[in-house]
Figure: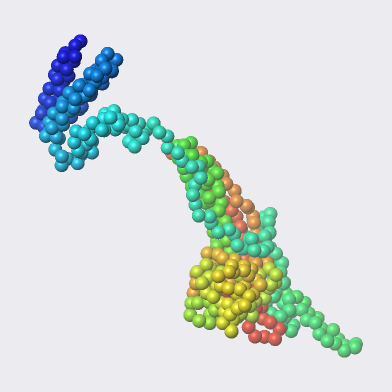
Length: 417
């Protein structure tokens, strides 16, 4: 085929393209028809370029000049058929013929592209990645169990523990009535005896329950059994510990702040915590100081960190030996501090507590059991999980203790209110 025939054929294709552009402007044709004809022209030109490079040396320059004239002619017609103010067309085809050709050259036109950005152009072929870690905020660990409470395994549904009556240390009342007295030679002896009682632990049932479809169990990226067991185990331990502090004893353990042996020290000032409150709590404490713990709600910390002595020195950082900017020690008056959200919020009774948990009994009848079943919800194609713990707890003292010389009562469980 001669060069003249090639040019004539391409001229015919250009005329077809111009006609298609006109039809687009008049609404008689779609842009896809224009794109098809333009690709045909481009392919013909690219083929001719290869032939010319192989057979003719300088003919390439003449062809490029001719094609530039053709492109200019098409560009003018294109801009008339595709309005410049069409945001959709500008995005898809470019603002002018130059941008259109640039899109074609970079292979970014929708009819030719494969890209991850859209599913129908190949994005569906790219797998999504998921971590097998489930994000969560760690729950606070158990306080009462971990701080020295007496944990007793229960072999039966009821456990009775003998104890002495410790209501008073007044003369003749120690251990409920034991008396020691000074006597003369050959004097008569006076009988006395202790007063016993029984502390009864009866397990209460703490339950967690959930259901899941079989599809979720099969398709989840984590083991649903392990996830649910861990999650519910943590929640049951959290709720158990909360009951050890404030449970009412009805269908649940008897909490420290509800027990009759709990002592409330009147707050010195409003809803804040001051040094006077801390000292007053120490003055009412009856327990083992080596086992004692401060249990403080986090909302009370701003006042705890600012506690001062009578000379306006910070208790934790007396002047000359430290600064407020250095790390605070983990004790207050030598007693370890435990921060817990399970005790009362600032300004309410028990926001700061001083406890010897050795006086709190925990009866474990049944540790945490996790059971999985596909039968209960078989007709719904679901699995169920049930987590059960049977436990009881209470302070074993029936009341605060009256000291020998009278005055304010004492207890291993003190709070301000």
